[in-house]
Length: 171
Image (cartoon, rainbow, N blue to C red; front, side):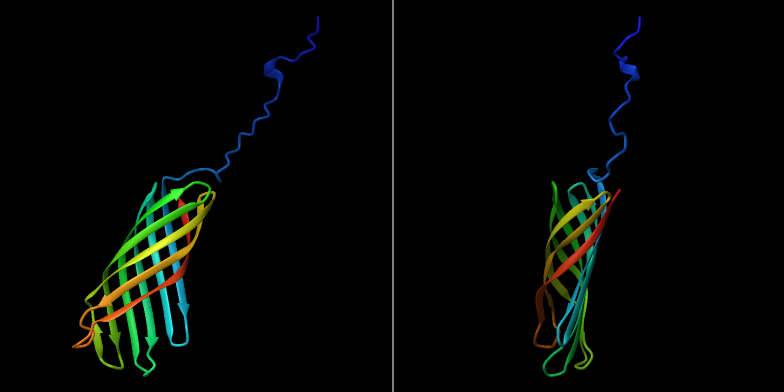
C-alpha cells in the first residue's frame, strides 16, 4: 500500500532561519554627536560622546566658539559639560538631555583678557532611527553660559543653539 500523503517529517520547512538584526534591541549604545556653524564673524562647534545603557545615558560635550566683535576684538570661548540623557524608543528613538558646564575658558587676545570661572547649562533633544546595530540621530542643542570676572567690572554671558547630528552603535 502506498501513502498518498507525505509524513510531516518529509515536508521541508518554510520558516526562515536568518536573523533580522534590524529589529534587535541593544542594551548598550555609544553615540557620537557633532554640530557646527558660522556667520560673518563667528564660528562655533560642538562634539559630544555619550554612553547609553538601556534608556539612560551619560556623556561629555565640548563646545568651542571664535568670534570677532563689531569693534574688531577677537574672543575665544571653550567649555565642557557633563551630560545626562533619557531615551524613549519605539519605531524611532527620542532622547532628551541636560548638561552642566563644569570647565572652560574665555579669552580675548586683542584685549588681553581671560577667565576660567565658567558656569551654565546645556539642553538637547534628539530623534533617531535604528538600522541594525547602527543608529542615526538628528536634533537641537541649546547652551547658555557665563564666564565670571572676564573684565574687572563685567561677566561675559553667551547663549545660543545649534543643529546636531550623530551616529550610534549598539553592542
